[in-house]
Amino acid sequence: MTETKTQQTDIPSQTEKKVRLFLILALIPLPILFYYNPLGAIILSYSYLLLLIKQPKLITFKQARTWQQILGAATLLASLVVYYAIILVYPEPAFYGVANYALHILGLFLIFYEIRALKEAFTPLFLMAATTLSSYAAAGLKPYITPFADELAYLVANILRVLGINANVTDMANIPVITLTSLTGKTVNGALTYECMGISSALIFAIILVVVLMEDPSPIKTRLLYSAIGLAVTFALNILRVTMIFISDYFYGAEVGATIHYIIGYTLFTIWLVCFLYIYSKRQTLHEKITSIWKKKPQIPTS
Image (tube, rainbow, N blue to C red; front, side, top):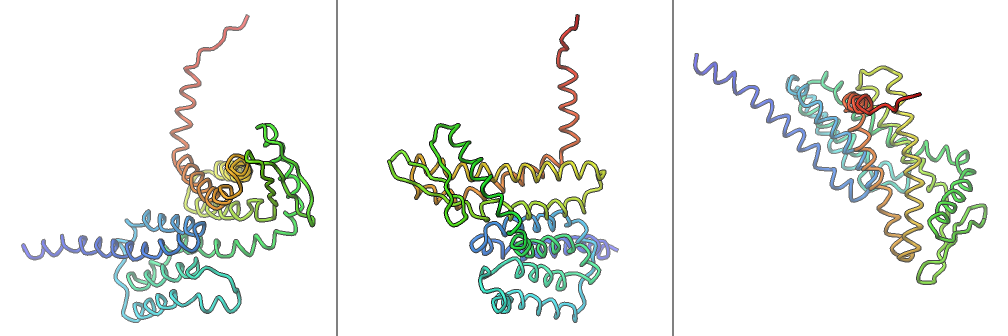
């Protein structure tokens, strides 16, 4: 009887260890992705977060069969070499990208869990697949979004003028160029191409919103309202990003501006994504606090 009780208490422990090993193996490729594709790695980090959230469900699944584990091992191997297949049709992917990681996660599911556990892999894999396809969607939108680059250039130039920086917009081969003179007296030119419009980050944010909506049982009006707010702020942050680059050019020169250009987009997007998800998860509590503060606010007597 004692041995039976010991075995029964050991079973959950072994299952939990298996889940921890699964999560550790799922985490290993992320540093590689951050090196080759920082923006993509941010999205895949959210996919990994979804796996962490699903941890209690993963404990309930049985171990995979032998044939399934063999298939999973083959999928893991494919995740390491998929780059060499993709490069034949798409010449400039990162060495290890989203598609590799998606196969990596799929392979781990096949090795560790019975086949029905794949339903828990759907949202992380959907996020990865949609992120991979977002680059093609962004390319398809280019002819329709590019004409608005002039509006973005004039808006940024007007913001710079309000801040006391003399900036002018000129046209060079149908591409708007913002020109200003830095404090060191050097002329700085910045072309606002399609990539400056923030479409890629907006698409990725939209993909994350879709995943959130799939997992969240809130009323459709609430989800649509927060989706609209989230996308609007994402575009506003892109305007802030471009403005900050030119401000860096003005005060510190083009070299510092180039460094800011590389990191500011990832930084702002990551901060906003974390803030949005936190606000969305705590929206009911925040709404109650704001309502409580508003009710306590002294009312001005009317005569």
